[in-house]
Length: 125
Image (cartoon, rainbow, N blue to C red; front, side, top):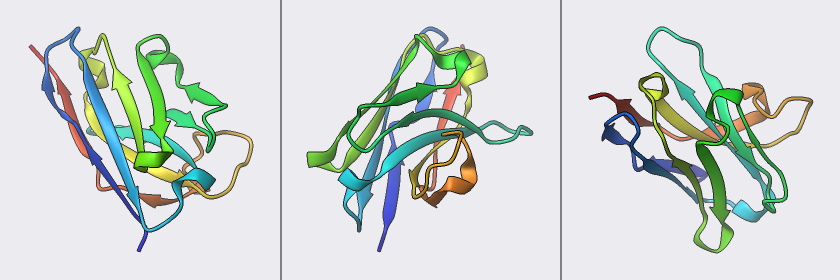
């Protein structure tokens, strides 16, 4: 069955770094774009970043541009999110998801059909 499993979250001080991983199984990762989303307590889920199936297109929400980098290794069935210069406002549960259709906005959650269970990121001193 299709599975996406996130890992790499944790507690980090402001200014620190984390690398999240999204391990895919049960389908051919090469055929799908993958998005990273996050949800902080009391807030709506938001799209963080997206990478197309062949890595030719990447997108970021404005508040993480220049700090986060998305990448993928299809041979390892894994998508990564490198997060640098972390801020307290980056605290959230981070999810990866498989995009099964493409409409106007990459961050449209309804375009994603499978989601991981999430990994917690806490940025605090």
